[in-house]
Length: 521
Image (tube, rainbow, N blue to C red; front, side, top):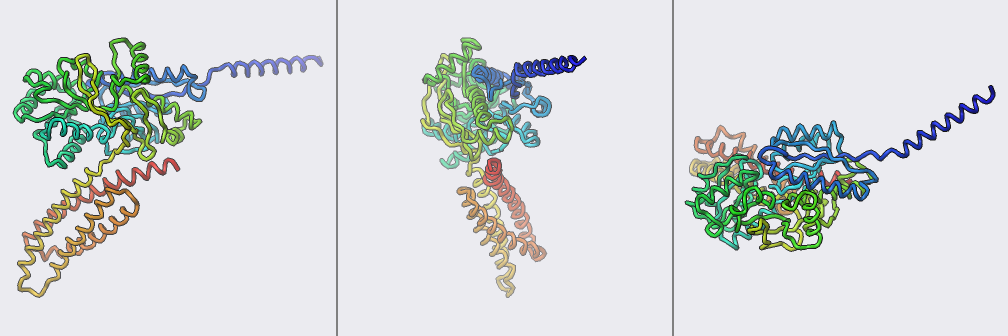
């Protein structure tokens, strides 16, 4: 009887030891990461290859032992080229699948659709495609180009190479319209305006009317922000109209090597594209990247700019997790800022100020083999500037000019009314409004061009002083003539538009910057 407790103790020890041994043999839990791209619909021709690049990078990380001793496990969702589907899929990846980060989106419409989801859950999206800027969210790591790394260098190069007569054509959504606003501002600096500007819905193949306008306007160059499979319809229409690169070259911002396979080299040879990466970059690192990609997916496959960005951002993520020692979103975000990686196209760096990526800008001409001959390069990586001051300054100039013109009209009318009157008080109030308006406009320009807290405070003080004078004038509306009242109303509408531009500027240049700073503290 005395031996039974002893035997029972041995059994317990052996059982516990067995459990510990089994636990020790269990593989580490994987780190789940989300993939969110369109595998169907109009954008599939561009986004499918990004999924391939992401999976290849994940396998490379896992072959090296994973991250923190844990393998990466991809969870893929199909955005279906439908923006509400992107938002629902992002919610699923974050809430149900509990991924550590999401790699995804191509169009700005899809990015804008998922952004509220990532903000709500304070999660992290790695976005691999060039875009229109005007955004800097701590919930996104931007590994594609900002406007100053793709759009504006191409406009300047086209001006030198071809001339200032430019026709703008794009898909009808956020990126093309905003990109073209940036282009028009840059053209205005050259004293030029577009000879035409037209849009078609994503997925449209009907470009005959637009091409007819291009033919009639005889531009020096066409700037193309069409996305997805619509590009085939556009270049087919150009060819049918007898327009080729010798007559009217096209500079495209959303066509790369992968899209050329679908569009057809015979339709695009001799035309141009602006990117940060081309497959033809002749370096050992890029040759190895291209070789590995084709060994995995087939000799007929190509690499391109979004493919490269989708690939290297996985490696940046892995380094951020290793550096943080954690899969916590906040820790990953802090660790990612400032990271440098030797990407196939050259060194890239995540700017700690705005979570965009330093990248080399390049322009290539389509060759008959479906590759690009690089005709221009910035050589060194360009710092990303997601917010171009020109956009805020142009809006301020437009609305400020309207305000100035209408208050001047009111003053002129008041001078005629009071020429024989002793009561000059209303005239003095109007003069004060125009004076304080001028000071506020000057301080606004300083705040935009140099984003320092002092300049922001100086503008706010100047604007408040202007507002006080405006309020004083508003309280005397009953004294205005009909002509003055009409000018007063026009002034008021322009003032509201100016205020909206001020709020957008503060959000873009000050609050977004502060938000990024607070994340790292």
